[in-house]
Amino acid sequence: MSNAKKLFVASRKFSLADQIAFAKFSGDFNPIHIDPIVARRTISGQCVVHGIHGLMWALDSFVVKLNLIPSAIIVKFVKPIFLDEEVICTYCPITKSLQITKESIILSDINLKFNSIINFFNFNLSCNPTQNFPIDRDINDLANLPIQDFFYKGDINLTRLLFPNLIKSYSREACCELATISEIVGMQTPGLHSFFLSARINFKQNKFVSNFFIEHIDFRFNLLKISINANSFTCKVDAILRPKPAYGTSIINMRSMVDDSEFCNVNALIIGGSRGLGESVAKLIALGGGESLITYSSGYDDCLSLSNSISKIGKKCSIAKITIPEDLHLFEKLENFNHIYYFPTPKIFGKRNVQYDKNLYNIFYEIYVNSFKKLLEIFSKTQKKISIFYPSSISVNNPLPELAEYIEAKIVGEKLCKKFNHKNIKILISRLPRTKTDQTMSLLEAKSKNPEDVMLPLVRKMLTLTR
Amino acid sequence: MTKRIEIFKKIQPIFREILKDKNLILKEDTSPSEIKNWDSLNHLTIIVEIEKQLNCNFTTKEIAKLNCVGDFANLILKKS
Image (cartoon, rainbow over all chains, first blue to last red; front, side, top):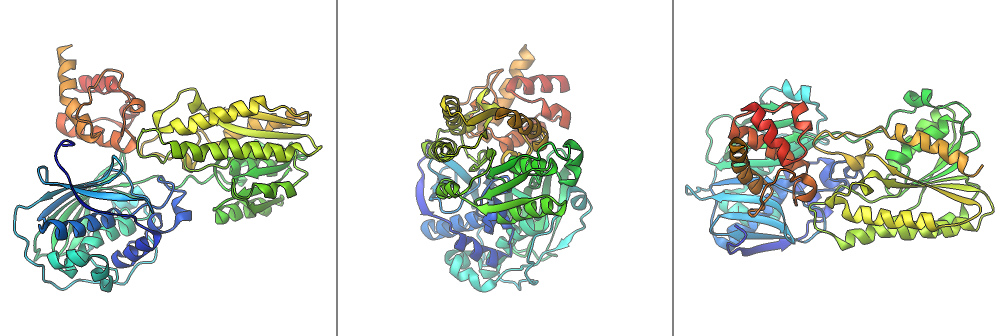
């Protein structure tokens, strides 16, 4: 396959504006495609291009370049397409496969069939108003879902603008129906927490009812087989109900873990504290009577909600937008802290292959080493005793290729901490186990600990460092 | 032993196809940590495809213990 000659079909970048346009056209407004803040809490950690958007772009480019019209398509969404990255579409005439790739990584694998001549589809499109937000279903809802009617819910006027060549091959209405596959998966079934794996599409004029329904659920993986009957095709979709974002344990439920006054002398700066480990530390310190300033980079809503939950139980906590490394200088204006927790991080488990990525290493190095070094320099000027927490990872002991850049940067960061010597500043390094956070979400169940269970003994240890 | 070799012969093309590596040679200790593309999604796809092609079914508990190719072979042997 890799030796077969491939023809270049097209290349492009998908921007957020492109995504919003496709959302309007298809009716698929799932936030994983159009809202970077919500998307950062999903398994991909960032916005991903609608799979059907990628497919329709590849087909639109293909039909004009090769002057062939597929009668059937099997598309596998192998890896996500991220925004603003250059992707290439190629075609192999021997295997009749279109591929969307980034460098050598296959992102979408599209097998085409030309078994029958496609007649221009002519029918009246069944339309319904756009849904504003996807349905949040769990697996039990899905198991009891009846057959649904098939409706196009997008803006038909965008078809010509977005897919000018595909319109000529299949018709405007057929293009709208194709886009509706995205709407069905992303907005309805499974809906909000969907993960689109593959689709087998057979183009043919369907004179019967247009509908869709779940054919089968594999409850071990929350894997759904969905059958879609449209006017212009029949389609079998494989999709997963992916894990919901890992929201931390509520502060009320953590009450029994901490004595009311055990952290009463703590004034903590929690850098990158809007979610995950930082969120847990903020709650633990508040429950123990301490105060915190939590910083965030992009998760204002998460941070505000955390701060409100702490205020509600009568404890103090403030928030500030500080992006690492750009805003490091702002720490010079902050003082009186005796605990600092350093949790800023880019997405760790979002890589799409195991090839070493020097750029990714540089991103990790900047945050885990350079910025941390600058932070130490800033707080070295103070006369106060400070305990600083530097989180490392258990994966340093058992390196995985997909985490190579992360691990390498953490090892350098650990070395920096060990070398650092200051009479008033003590650093606690801990190689943390896998915890239930957005960073470690997986389609398969993986053993992980609650962040508060991991962090409580460490917050207690921080107390003893500068005594 | 012959049965084990047979199993490897049957599952190798599945791994090659899903992991997009036509030269992949499976060994007992081949695991996700050393194979390009063997992520959680492909792990799941491999399981579903093996079940389909070898006509067997794995439970959630059994799946949780599949850490390397040898584990797959053991489980398939147990099921056959």
